[in-house]
Every structure is written in C-alpha cells, then in structure tokens.
Length: 345
Image (cartoon, rainbow, N blue to C red; front, side, top):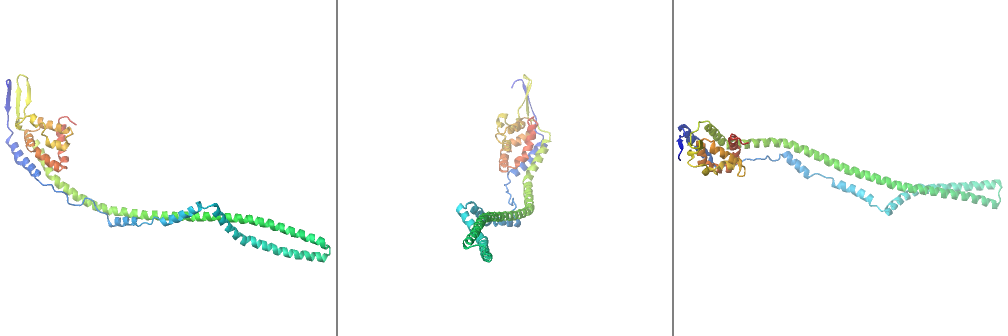
C-alpha cells in the first residue's frame, strides 16, 4: 500500500521456548487427562442413636384410646335426650325416696299411732267429751296429721327432685373432669416422649456431624488434587505474562498519519478470529457479553505468543473446560483481570 511502511520483529527465542516447551506441553497433558469422578461417600448416614429415635417415633402411643374414651364421655353428655335425662333423675329420686321419704313417712306414722293412744287415754280419764265430741276431736287431730304428712311429702318430693338433678349435674361434671384429665395425661405423656426422642436425635446429629466432617475432608482433598494441575498451569501462564512480549507487524500509513495493528504473528486477521474465543465462551456462556470483552483484550492487548497458543489450542481447551466445569472458577479470575484492564467492570 503506497504511503505506508511495514516493520516486522520476531518473538524472542527464550519466550518462544517457554511457550512451546513448557506451557503448551503442560496444557496438552491436562487436556488428555481422563476425568476421574469422586468415588467416596458425600453424605454421612444416620447414627444408631438417630435410627433408634426414628424407630421410637414410629412406635409412639399417640393416646388414641384415651382420646376416644374422653370423646365418648363428652359425646354421651352432649347427645343425651330430655327423656334420658328424666330417666336418670328418676333413678336418683327413687334412691331419695327409699333412703329419705319412706323412712320419714314411716316415722310420722309411728308417731301418729302414739299420739292417738295418748289422746284416747286423755279423753277417757278426763270424761270431758261425749262420743260425738270425741269423734270430732279425733277427726280434727287426724286431719292435722294428714295435712302435715302431705306438706312434708311435698317438701320431700321437691327435695328428691333437687337431689336427682343435682346428682345428674355433679355426675356430668365429675365424668367431664375425668375425661379431660384422661386426654390431658395422654397429651402430656406424648409430649414428654417426643421431647426425649428429639433430644436423642440431637445427640445423634452431633456424632453424625463428626462423620460428615471426615467425608467433607476427603472430598476437599479430592478437589485439591483435581484442581492442582490447573493451578500449576495458571502459575505458568502468569509467569509468561511477565516476560517481555514479542512484536507483531506494525503498519504505518504516512498519508493518514495513523497506526494500524495487524496481528501478523497470528497469520490471520481480526475477522478470522472474531468468533474464535472458545474458552471464554465456555467460561462465561454465549449469552454473556463478557466473553466478547475478553476477546477484545485477546485481539488488541494480549502477548503474541498467548494469541498463537490460544488460537491453536483454545478449541480443544474449551472441550476440557466443558467436561470439567470446576475449571471455570480457576480460569475466570484471569479473564476478568484482562477485561478490567480495558476498563470493563
């Protein structure tokens, strides 16, 4: 092109040797390594204490029989008909009659017999009454007795009714209280047993935590072994970035007074590598624009030896990253640092 000059400078020998004989063979060795899955246990099993506790939960007496009995008591009281209540009260009244009314009436009758005998003796001895007047007197005394008897009987019958209803009410209260206590005791027993089993589970979890810590330590050791080669590769590439870079091809247009970077060491132009950022796409994902930001650094700021290696081995390296996803966490900090060097967040 007229009005321009081209100056080409080659990569220093020690830099090329470091790339070809150290970094690339090491990366190839990693790429050819077969994936080795973790063969140990990841989750600790239940301890004997916990197994016994869980078995205890399955055998708990939840108090079904006690709750059923208590429920039957309350249901019986609530569903009782007026006729059934009257029959119960009548039974209590019969008890009152035989225990109180009948003995009281019998006592009154005996007393009346005594009074009659005494009255007849008084009349005979005094000679004060004729037959007619005596009959009237005795009739009046008999009437008074009958009136007292009826009055006493009415009072006793009222007391008997009160006694019957009182016995029914107190019986219901007593049975309800007993049913409540039965259900409450069953609930308290269940709560106590569950608390004991919970404490047993907690104690078992302490022992299980120790077993889990041992399993975690084994897995951590495995992860360190898996990551170690990539850690070493990162150290090698970090050392390479500190080596002075080689030079590509610089074209200066004398007419425009500008400078264009041609990336001659790639053997291809920007258009040919624009979509070739395999590893970055795998690390960030195709939809994340960060991979294009890393590509910008690759095309404009990266050392030529790095671009050469990336274009030659990047596609195969991306396959390895895809197979071993944990490598993304190792590679991403390096790529993020390069993006941020261009001003990206």
